[in-house]
Each structure stands twice: as structure tokens, then as C-alpha cells.
Amino acid sequence: MPNLKQQKISLITNKLLKVESRCQKCAVNSLCLPAGLSNNELEELEAIIASSQITDKNTSLFSYGEKFNSLYVVHSGMFKTTTVDENGKERIISFHLPGEIMGLDGIHSDTYHSTATALTMSSFCKIPFNSLMDVAEDYPIIQKNMLKVMSKEIFSCKKNHLDIGSKAKLALFIKTISQRFKSRGYSADEFFLPISQRDIASYLGMAEETLSRIFKKLQKMEVVKYKKHILTILDTALLTNISES
Amino acid sequence: MPNLKQQKISLITNKLLKVESRCQKCAVNSLCLPAGLSNNELEELEAIIASSQITDKNTSLFSYGEKFNSLYVVHSGMFKTTTVDENGKERIISFHLPGEIMGLDGIHSDTYHSTATALTMSSFCKIPFNSLMDVAEDYPIIQKNMLKVMSKEIFSCKKNHLDIGSKAKLALFIKTISQRFKSRGYSADEFFLPISQRDIASYLGMAEETLSRIFKKLQKMEVVKYKKHILTILDTALLTNISES
DNA sequence: CGGCTGTTTGATGAGTGTCAACGAATGTGG
DNA sequence: CCACATTCGTTGACACTCATCAAACAGCCG
Image (cartoon, rainbow over the protein chains, first blue to last red):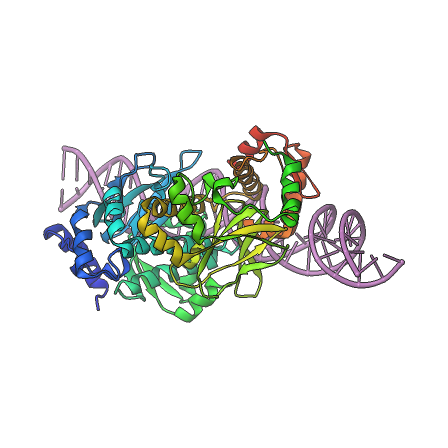
């Protein structure tokens, strides 16, 4: 079971070694499009996927308004997707962990509606959408996986309450991230979070200062510890409790 | 061009006449799954769709936790989808106008994650999901339409800002609904809104009382008029302005 | 007419955004 | 490796929005 050290080391080794691009050996294939595919089907899928590439922090895979042509999957590291509001301020739409697909919002209008940027040294796979559609014609399970991925996205997006307080919002955010790390084989209780507090605040729709204060409160309550972007969950039960209040 | 009266009358005639079930003659087919299909493909699709049925106000098509088996499309009238929060209070997830698909969030887990309830006398089409997948295998354009519909849903869901004030929230809500009516051939400036203020407040994540006050403010500013569930937009430019502030 | 549900109004306080300033951490160039 | 610049996080004071509670009112249906 990979732990915190391994999580960080994997970011570094990415840089040194050519990343294993085959879905068959990918650590997160069960969460990604290849879920449940036979070897045969997997090979067809691999044939169209651009072998996973490395990006440095702050580089973008695609930008708001560009013509849509490919989906991108996080292979390691973390990305954020953003838009810009009327006043020119960046708004964070979501954070993406390994196995999560970016660019889905471009399908309906042939244009990307967000910008995807690496939050840390990361690697990703590129899937040309038209090729994917071609393969999906022959392998219905791939279509179905696409629908499932998108259905999950819709569900988790709509689930976000609007009417909860800042403390509950942050607690829920931490809980959700924790679960996502867990289902990827990382520790649920301690992980490296390469996101600035400004970005977290923007994502949660609150002021940076408020987030800082709430974080402090949660630490004083000994629910979590947060230092140098390493988050440790000390009291899961209480965290859940707060997230529901 | 149908106007307010026609919008209301269509609700009544539904009750009297057997609703035209054929997608080819449906008023909203260009917004729905049949978009861009040839006659041939359309017939295949129609073959699996349960002819459109009438429901009275307050009846539910499916409920939270039930096994997922079909998608439902609004044919006329309006529906809401809801869940229940930890404290047993109903939370509105979304409102659905003709041509919009309900039940999409059930695909990924084979279970409905919301309850769909008619807000007024309405009619709907039922699409068994497995049959749809079978047809889609033979007609790639149907798959692609599914993806487009879901992509659009993801986009519009993520677009919702969290960090805007109540006045902007309501203005944005009105603007969005107006555009949806417009693209369905109804007037963008005057429409029948069979939603209680309680439900709107729940949807927007604010207290019922706050909504009432804000509505009053918008009326005093002569941006909109709202009486007996008939909403009239008086100043579109100002409305847009407020929605962005 | 009385009972229900949906909407309105007022008073109050808690929670948060905003502004301003500072401290800590990180990155940069010589 | 150090001095500097820049970004990032923290803290305090204050005003304002909004949720909450309580109560009255309006519309609707039996």
C-alpha cells in the first residue's frame, strides 16, 4: 500500500523514468476508462492513447475557448481546471486526481470550457475524442464506461450543497479528497495536497481569509493537521460530523 | 411562436388528448436525444421509447434509492429532482423543462440518486436504458448525442458560482430559465413558473424569507414582475447586470 | 366559514466578506 | 550563498449580508 512518501516519490520518479504508458499496468486503470475491459479491448484502447507525458507545474494541457479534440486523463500528480469570471478573476472548477478525466465539458460544443493546469509535476494521457468514438463503436463496454464516468461526474457535482456553512464546506472537501485518495491506493488519513489555500478558497466559494481561519479552527479542534501542504486527518468521525452540520 | 397562453393550454390539452408520442413530431426533438437523427435512426429509437404518458402534479417517476432502469424525458410541463439531506429536509437538485433528460445520475451505480416529481400536470417519455444501449451500438450518433447531453449537464452544473450574493443568484436563475424557455420556442420574457418559492429558495440554497425579500427588491427595481407564478422580465439588460455582480 | 399551505414582514445575531497590514515561505538573480 | 522580490498565509477591525425565530397575512379548497 503506497504511503505518503511513495506518493511524493512517484512525482519525482516520473521525471526521471519514462512513465509506463500501458493501461494494463497503470495503477488507476480500474477507476479509468479501461475498467472492466478484456485484454483484447484494452489493446484497442491503448492503440489510440498518446503515451503518458510529463508536465511541469503550472503548464496547461488545454485552455478555455480552444477547439476541443482530446480528453486528458491524469496519470500522476494533480491538475486544476479553471475559468475566468466577468471581472477577470480565476475561478477554480475542480481538482483532478490520477484516473480522472479532464475535458469532458468540451464534448457538447466542440470547445473547451475550462483551462487545465498542473498543480505540481504531473503526468497525463491524451485520448483523441474522435478515435475514442471510433473504438467505442466496436466495443460497447467502452461507451458504457464513458457514460458511467460522466454520470458519476454529474452526480458528484449536483450533490454539492449550496447552503452549508464554511466549516462544513471545508470538512466535506477534505473528506471527499481523502476518499478519492483512498480509492486510488493512497492513505486516506495523510496525503500531500499541492493546492494553494487561495485555490481551495476559490473552489469552495469563500474568502481566502475565511479559509485560513477555519483551517486554524479545525486544527485547534484537533480534527486535522495541515503543515507544508501535508494534510493529516486526526478524527475522521468528527470530520464527518462537521461536514454534515 | 407559442406564447404564455399556449404554454398553459398545452398543459390542459395534454390531459384531454392522447399526447403525440412520436419523436418526429415532438416540439422539442431538436434539443433531445433525436437531435440530428435520420428518419431511419429515429424509428429505431422510437421503437424502444414508451409512448408519452401523463402525470398529475406531485406524482413521482422514480425515487431515490430505487434500482435504475430507465431514463425519463420531459415532454410537457415541469419536473423537479430532489434528494433528502441528513436532517430529513428535501433539497432541490434541479428543475426540468421539456426535452430535458432525468435519471442520468443513476447510470453509474445502477441506482437512482434522486426523486423526480411533477410540479404541474405534465407528460413524459420513458426510455429503458438497456434498450437504449442496444440501439446505440448500431447507431453511433445516438451514443454521441448521449455524451453531448451529459457533457452539457456537466458544464452547466460546474458553471454555477458558489460565491455570489443572493440577488445575483436569483437574477442568474431567472436568466437561465428564461433562456431555456426561449430555446424551446416559448417566450423568453414572460412564462408560467409552476415552482413554489420554497422550492426556488431550496434550489438556490437560501432561506425562503430571503428569497421573498429579494423578489420584492427586484420588482421594486422594475427588473421583473412576478404574480401568480407568472414571471415577466421587464429589463433584460439590468437583469444580466445584476446576475454578474 | 375555518383550516391549510404558501408568502410576507420585522427584529436580531452569527457568520463572512472586505480592507489593511504584517509575517512566513518561496523563488530569483547576482 | 546571500540580498531582494514575490507570492502565500495570517491576523485584527469592521460592516453587511443573510439565516433564524416569531408572527401576521393571503390565497385556496373543502
